[in-house]
Length: 141
Image (cartoon, rainbow, N blue to C red; front, side, top):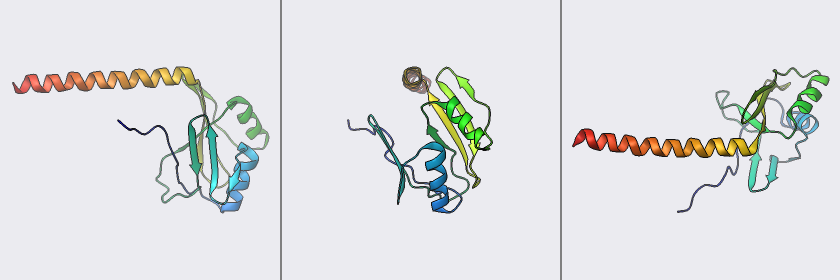
């Protein structure tokens, strides 16, 4: 069966003037920009960001980063307020608000642990669904 293998794009609009927002993310997160936004090509992952957002109510945006502590240190040196780094078995997270008011999450994953965790979550969910199905059939019998 064919299936989705990753995210092809996320299209959101950040607060602020396009050129200023792009310049900020180029300088502070090292994102390369085009007229459409920014893109990532890593392994099998392709992600396109257009910095367009229809509503303030949209979900928080999460950037995967390679060296979170170093990046947080650099942001703080440039007087950008950040949250403290929170570490979990599957990775570390921190947040900051850009100068335009966009609240951003940064994540340095522990990829092997994260993949194994997600695999177990999927397997557990599938087992629960099978058990729930049997219980429903048993109750109806």
